[in-house]
Image (tube, rainbow, N blue to C red; front, side, top):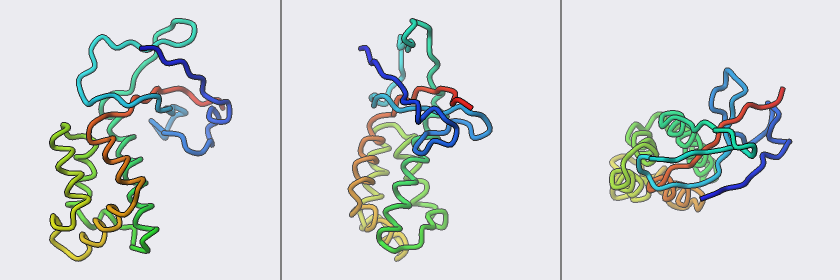
Length: 160
């Protein structure tokens, strides 16, 4: 497989919106280029235009970036539903968000189903959150993708 892409110059400045920040302490950002099945990558090489090898994010870096994206979408769903955007007060919801991104496909799918099914909740606050997430198209689609695949993020340094 070959993917040819160029990062637009507007995304290469440190204050660019919509960038995945790999490390806030540095200028290291990442751009998503593909979804790959959750599986161990073997014999996978990534090269730049000149044929030089490009690094991939570690599994942990990838999980953190994907989890941040999923949480952002979840917070947006709560805001649209006029609910307090306080997921941290709901440990079962937070745990399932994490499992969607970091779990094996079966485990991730089960966590996603709990996030979209009111019958799996125990408190009124959880039911309200699950109802808001289930109504949100962006959350349903991103959680479906992340339950079965991981985002291939290519790191790069922003221009100062």
